[in-house]
Image (tube, rainbow, N blue to C red; front, side):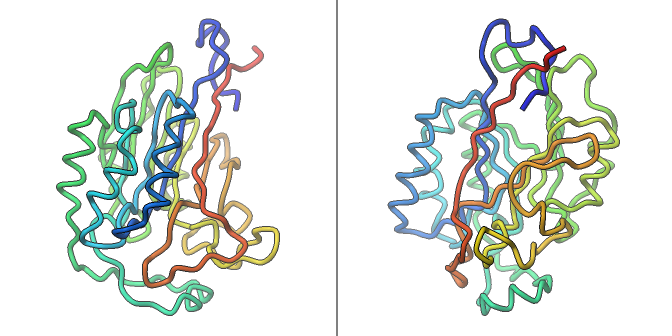
Length: 263
């Protein structure tokens, strides 16, 4: 993805961003823990986690085991509602009606998880902006709280990113157009989000029936344009423990290779 000015990488091939989202961890998911841990072998320069890490009140230790090697790398995160509140029982096929479900408001231990992320050096981009350098790349990153349930307040981070930055990244759990428009208007080059599970219940060819968000079905997963901004929507690594089904929509994490433009 050519987003950097020529010369930024000083001879390096690319700047690698690992995007993980929607772990929805429950205790005992050893294969998921091993798979996520092994992502460190991709040697990303930066790790971005766009939320919904939990699907059980006792799952924080397993989240930290899964992300353990990645927490040693530079990283940022924003949260989704399934970091704050436990999932509630639901018929998975009601998902097809696209109706927004109210959170359970049963608290999850998100404060401890947030503290652990930050103690390892990850930056909390939930309603916050950050400027820092990784390798040769100067980053400007801003994020909002979960807009799917109107927890966001764009005013907290409004405005253009630092023009001296090499790459401006916007983070939000759910790809809601009303927020994406503001990031694009402010001049962010790349947005990262999750939440949709790629449609979760799809037709052959990963054709989503619904998005469970404001984004259209064609942009429910993967890399797309949103006006002048690139947007990547992760189809995520898990599901609610009450709806453990995916149809024609495999779980995944994504390694984004950011390169220099030709001029």
